[in-house]
Length: 350
Image (cartoon, rainbow, N blue to C red):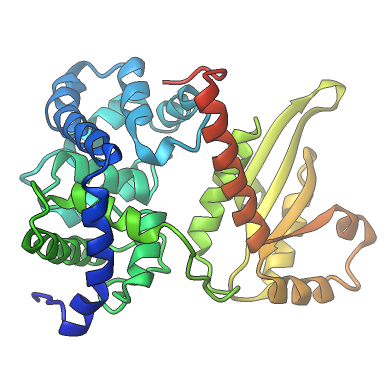
């Protein structure tokens, strides 16, 4: 079903469009436009031409080009992880499908999200938008924040980390409507990558804070994995750590004479606290697990803490609590630190 912007929506857009028009006159916009054209050329022409003989170096290059990977100081590590998690043959086939513009965008999106490990919604939609900028939008933190500020949440839910294929198609249609509003104001050469720049400008400044409990389970899970990897751990999601215990995130490290040590994280948003405790106790039974960490909002963590009374003392000593707000703060601080270090050129990268 076709969607339209109401007069109220268009009124909400106006001051942000005026701000964007001022940005168009800056040197920053000129550089962003040059980057946009390079990005389109790479994902439309260069990368598809390399798929038949896709190498580790090619993976490192396309991963390193993604805005979604900019939080990583060492993008080579991230690229290697993507290769190890998928294998070059599988990655080649999935990229071929993702870049095939004859396939509906929602089908390409859903397949990539389901099959390519290590590339989340921000990375997958960025590849789609860069290879098909007239048809596909980007779904990342900045887009979600802009959707909140523009009060467009009735079209697509900004609190969702991972959209469905139908929701992704609606998002792209919505961004197409914004593109038309920009064209009316004589913004040149508008596609959905230009709209992404517009949303980035909208998202700048004071953020719209969600309620503490309004977090997305998969988003926090993936963020914990990224934090662990950036700290030097071997980090994985959805791991069978012990018999009957599949956990959200595992960090592993080899520490001197201790051998391999493992830290287990379970993100709890809703459901049975008893089931959470049982799963963590099963995880702790693994010989290498040193610590199990429950992750949730403050209110839920308080309830979880109360439910641990009466459990074995050894388990209670091994249990820690990590508020979602702290996870998000750590992730943001690591992004800022990585950007600063990248500017120094001290860390090997792409």
